[in-house]
Structure formats: structure tokens, C-alpha cells
Image 1 (tube, rainbow, N blue to C red):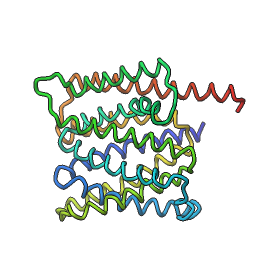
Image 2: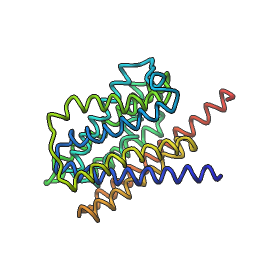
Image 3: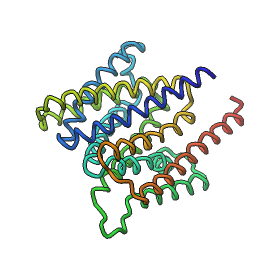
Length: 294
């Protein structure tokens, strides 16, 4: 029970730091090119990944994969998604973007059928449809004042869902450390190929904020790794939705964003549908274990 409590603490620490990280990304993404911000963040992240790999059997062992192209694709896709979301935080709003991003698990469930050959029953399919309705409610496309910039976080959600699908696929044949290695290294290489063309000298105060962003990126992943060492994914996932609450608080108090009724109601619908799909997947996994006798 004590270890479980530690796992929950690590999870809450991770989502809190992730929310702060999003706030820093929004501020810096408003002032500087998003690809430049992502590149700086990934340089620090790559160092963290290399150090972790060196302590976990060696870098060569971590880099050994049965699906190299898919692993590289994952890393490049994630850094591209981060660039998209930094742009979304800066221009569509942090609270709005985070609310839309909560629909990612629902998109993963939907895409797992054609891309992974998984079966989705009518209960989860219904939850997905309801959740996607919540996303539509958040962006309110029928409004006379509909802002097309809201499509940017929608794109980010789909990209993150594809990253999740790719992660599931490589998880069938590679170790988690290998996937983590390629997430950091492939992303760092990809951002470095493009980012220098957008190099911008930071203001003195913004160097401190960039350093804070890099540190938060490393600590948040460390806390999340520790959480997964103690808890099952089904126990971690529900707590990650607290990031939306913390992020919305930062958006309102620091950036003076406004929470509209459709954002709040839509986010509640999306989170509720997401929690149901997580619970349902965990329930079905337990049933399969009982049938197989594991």
C-alpha cells in the first residue's frame, strides 16, 4: 500500500510538472518559433535519455530494436506533434488546446481497429462517439465566430494518437527503454535538422524560462517513469486528467484565458468518455488473463 501511495504521488508530480511545462511552452512559443523552442527542449531531453540508457544496460543495448523505421517514425512524429501543440498553446489558447488533447485516448481506441487489428466492442465505440462529440462541443464549429486556429490542437491530438498507436506496435517486440531511447534521440536529431534555421537569441529572462522548460521536461518524465514502475497503466491514466485541471488554472490565472461553458462541458464529456475506455480496456485485459490462466 505504501508503494502504491508513492506511485500516485509520482503520477501527480508528473502531471503537475507537465502542466507547468505547457505554460512555459505557451509563453516561449508566443515569443519564439515553436520549432526552436522544441529543439532546445529536446537537446536537454536527449541528454537525459542517454544518461538513463547508460544506466539501464548501455546505450547500444537500448538502441537495439526489431522495428527501427517505426521507432524513428515515432520519435520524429512526437517532436512534430510538440511543435504543433506549442503553436496551439500560443495561438489557440492553453486551456482550449489541453481540453481538445484529452480526446487522444479516444482516437487511439478508434485507430487501433484498422492499424493494429484490435477489436472494439459497442460499449467503447459508443464512448468514443460521445467523447468526440465532446471535442466538437469544445471547438464549437457551428459558431459564427469559429476560429480555424482551433483545428491546430485537433491536428495535435490526431498526431499524438498516431504516436500512441506506433508505441503500442513497437511495444509488442521492443523493450520500453528502447522506445524511450528512440523517442528522445530521433526527436532531437529531427528537430536539430530544422531548428537552427529558426534560431533566435533569447532575452536574458527567457534563458531562465527555457532552462526551466528543459528541466521540467526531464523531471516530468522521471516522475512518470517512477509512477509506471509502481502502478499499472490503468491506475496511472485516470490521474493524468488532473493535468487539464492544473493547466486550466494556469491558463486562467497566468495568461488571463477565459473558460467558456462549452469548453467546460465538452471537457467533462471527453474526460468521462476517456475514463470509461481506460476502465473498459483494463476490465477486458483482466478477463483475457483469467481465460488464459495467467
